[in-house]
Length: 221
Image (cartoon, rainbow, N blue to C red; front, side):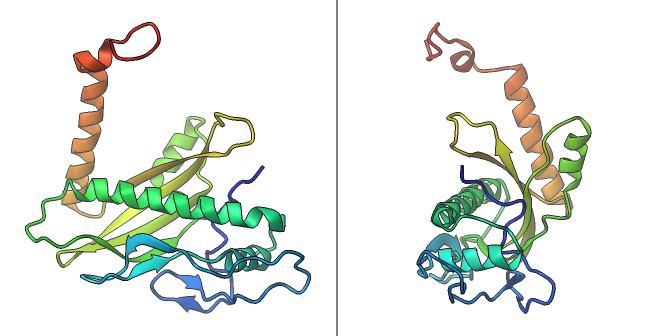
């Protein structure tokens, strides 16, 4: 079964020379000396903008770079699973970006500028207060954490992303859950988080008739 390692392998290791924008090492595309499968070196372009008013997008690591990162950290992973792992890695980050855009739509912004990801950092060894709190009550711990810095209209906003493995719907098919939210770094973000939590609770306590009325087969009546 393919699964994401405990902490994205693209995070830095001691002695790495880092890119200041993403705190990641600049990994080579050179195959390992004992590698038996030729891995692609092409890098997929994400949908995530990296600069203001620019068409440039962040690039995901190639399967060869991903494999090199795994080997650098001493994680033994079958070479034939690397491309699937890269697909999962890319999918999770695309989903995270969509969640960021949902949150950004809740902020008041007088300009027409679209948000963009200016930099990010992996912090797998630093669990968020929310994750630590839930773990006290028996909830699973996230396998990774990212901090994303979103720029828009002259402001920078930090988002926290916890990555969780979820129960499998189909045996052998991994399922993941993302908890994406603005960090509580300023009063506006605190208020946005509070309003969203209140909205969720309101919908739980007072569901709409359409949501509350279901037929015996689980479909809306």
